[in-house]
Length: 268
Image 1: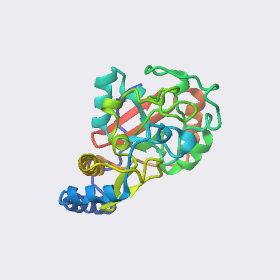
Image 2 (image 1 turned 90 degrees about the vertical axis):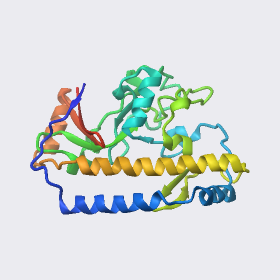
Image 3 (image 1 turned 180 degrees about the vertical axis):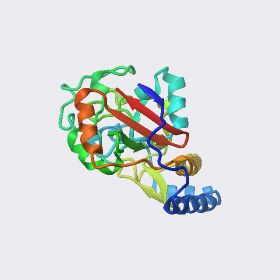
Image 4 (image 1 turned 90 degrees about the horizontal axis):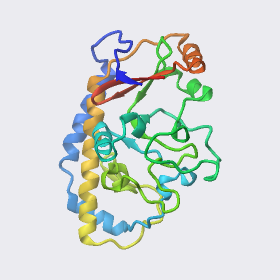
């Protein structure tokens, strides 16, 4: 169940660290908007890239396939699929929320449709809760920052077709997917591991990719800025972890997801 969160908010004023982060983000955004897309396109051409349509970037067996999504991206996927927010995305926590499915074969984790099923559900294991203790409030609610696309029990993206490795939401896929394996960090172009790197890319395609990468970079900075500006810290307590574990055992587990639009409480 999803609902706007009231949370455990001790005060509304921002901390000095929060103000520092906001100032740094605004400065980075100012510089990011001045980046030259032509220069970026030239860098892309030197590196080279051509998608091999292998689907490896969507499969956990080949590495970290987590896809962080901002609220506007979730909304686009909702319009395209008719699915609810929680069928599309879940809380993005510090560590990988998929535990039980690791190591399972595709036969043990059958293909699912776009409708959420038990095979797609992620959960917070006791071990994961231990690692998230600093993100648990005094009532045992876990606080997460941002959203991640849902995945199957075997860790593959829930929107990846097994036999064809095609994306079921390709026209509205997240920016992380459409710009992979490129991204900008610290105002510099970076790449992830990908078999398509090193292949020739046309001037036209490199320019389009450069524009998309810049748009993604600025959009994510703006979204993070919104999160920092809206976030109000919560009250922690010594019994928070214990309460979270008991709530999970009783089926009354609650998570509060903070994003640029505020906070969403997920329970059940």
